[in-house]
Image (cartoon, rainbow, N blue to C red; front, side, top):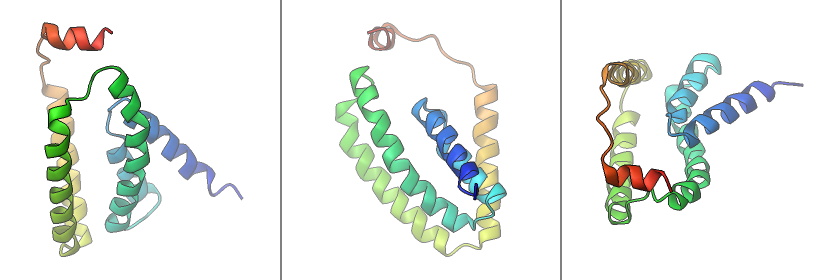
Length: 132
């Protein structure tokens, strides 16, 4: 009867993290593959569908805070669509075990770079945009 509760909580938590820009989609993939026992390909498809409304919900807030670079939107969207299509095509030819290992290595790399990075002081233009 409560089989929907854990997925609902996982989706809510990762949605909140996504709104903060923390990478909720990556955490959702971990939940779907490690705890919900979904195939990596299925989890990636669900994650793509999950990302669309999460991004749409966060977009007005980013617009209001002046955090959108309008000149970069179209090139970024076009490059993202092309890269996503290419990556989906390539991943379909990969063994699920290899895909999981590659994703794990990617997560380790991202985690280590976040732990070891040194933040640069923000310049005045960024400070002005974020303090509105």
